[in-house]
Structure formats: structure tokens, C-alpha cells
Image (cartoon, rainbow, N blue to C red; front, side, top):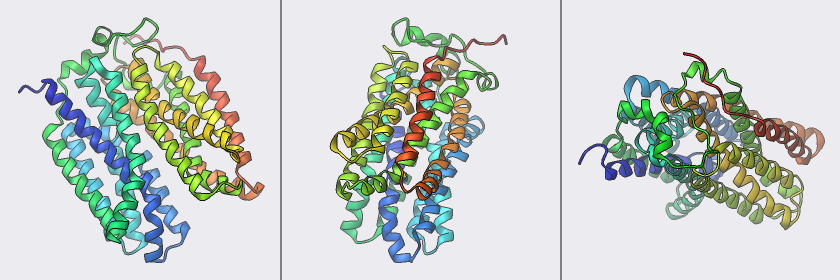
Length: 411
């Protein structure tokens, strides 16, 4: 069977999607579920435990350019191999944690491993191996990550309940990560050089779409792409959306509690939000061949704006439902649309560096939870914070709607 046989390509897709599912399940979505057990056994404060969570998020952002560096110098197998071993090591150190120092090291390793195994290498591979199904496969790949975020809390609760040990959950994650890393070393293959170089030029014929969907005819150089206003608009759109999402993830539960919403309802709303986010990524993959991703991005920003506005007054079922659907749709679709716009506007050949730089910029969104907490302490609640975010999002909707495709400079 040749390297470009359909079965080989789909095996590659299945492996990298499974990895994205696992790392999404085992980090941000489930750490909050396991932390109370760790805090109880190790006698930590909430502040100490929260610092590790913040360190995980910060390391993911700061390490966003690392996978592109490894990919260019050591190859795609090494990217997944090194990232997978780092990820498994982080899980193992969580399982062995007996103090804060080891906990912080483990969190940092998970952040570095997550960056190395998530969207940057995944989008690179799908661009190279499946240009004729680019939108659908990238959408399905990102959906796998979104479903991981839904499954993570359920898996954590089940394993801890079944084994009466939070350490067993982290050991299970470490073993699963090592198994998937081994599969990646078998099935992940570098796309043919001509596929990456010619992808942008041949994609219009490979993936049918109406005339309104823009795609560059030539690949951009990294240094030219990051100088365009379009790159910065796309990056800031993702950053502001992530600012809303991180803040709502951190404080929506508390905020709804102050408005009289029960803990069980608030938890269910956040789970529903995650499920909608996963489904919206799949929807983006289906629509991107018919609707320009810029329009999808504008729709995502509008959805996020509506969702955060509803959250600010979420003391009734109508507002709660609007928040879960609109916020989930906004984040999931924005996550997909920004990735597709970078490929459509600047081509796939230097996408790892371009996409990695966008992810690095989004690290600025990490200030959201801390800033919201500061203003909530000052003004006695989170409603004003979320309404301030609405004003920021409205500005981004207007700017993004006015954006036009970039013009390739003379090279």
C-alpha cells in the first residue's frame, strides 16, 4: 500500500484526531474536576491549585511556535513523538505529585506537549494530505478536540469513582498518550513536498466551492503574512473571543450562582456549551466549501457577543439557554474559521509558523479571568465585566466584517 493510498491517509487522520481528543480531554476540561481531590489530599489552597491551571494555559500559548520549529528541523514524526512523550510525562508527574513544585512542573510540561500535538501539526498534515477535503477534514479534526473537552470531565469522574484514586486518572491519561504516540510514529507521514508547495494553486480545482470563497493563488512568506492587517484582525478576533471564553469558563459558574442559579444547572449549562462548541466546528467544516470563512468568523463573533450579553443577565432559562448555544457556537466556529482563513489567505506552505504566531498572540487572553476577578471584587459582581466584553466584541464584529482579502506583495 502506497503512502498516498486513501486508507493510509484516513489512518493518519484518525490517529491525529484521537490525539487531539485525548489531550483536550485530559487537560483544561478535566483538571478542574480532579483538582478538588488533589487539594483535599495534599492540603493546598485554591490559589495554589489555580496557579498550576494558569501555568498550563500560559505554557500552551508561549509554546505555540515550538511545533513549527520542531517540524521544520526534525520532521512531523518527531513533532508528535517529542510532544507525545512530553505530554505523557506531564500526566505521569501529575500522578506522582506530592507537592506544589512537582505539580507546577507537570502543568508546564502538559502545556508544552499540548502545543506540540494540537492544531499546528494537525492542520499542516491535513493541508498536505487532504487538499481536496481540506475544510471538512479540518472541521472534523477540530470537532474531535471539542468532543474531548466534553468527555474529559465525565471520564475523570468515572475513573475516580471506580478506583477511588485521582492518581489513577492521570496514570490512565499517561498510558493512553503513550499508546497514541506510538501509533503516530507508525502512521504519521510527511506530505509530499510538491503537495505542500502546490496546494494553494491546485486547491480551487480540488475542492469545489462557489466563486465567493476566496483562496490565494500563491503561498505567502511568513514575514509578509504577519505584516498584513488581515493577519492581525484574524489574530485579535481569536484573542478577544478567547478572552470571553476563558473568563466565562472561570467565572460563569460563580456568576450564575450569585444570580440564584443552582450548581447542578450551572454545571449542565457549561457542559452544553462545550457540546455546542464541538458541533459548531463540524458545521464549519461542512459550510466552508460554500460560505467564505470570513463570513463564518463574523457569525462566530456575533454569536459570542450575544452569548456573553446573555450570560451577564443569566438569571432565567431564556438567557441561560441563549448563553449556552451562542457562546458555544461562537467559540467553536471562531476556532475553525480563523484556522481556515489563515490557510485561504496565506496558503499552506508556511502555515505552521503563521498559525503558531496567531496562537502565541492569543496568550494575551489569559489576563481575562484575573481581570474579571479584580473588577468583580471592586464592583460586587461579574455582570459589568461581561457587558464590557460585549462592547469590545461589537467593535471586532464591525472591523472583521469590513476586512477584505490581502494582496500578495511582489516577491
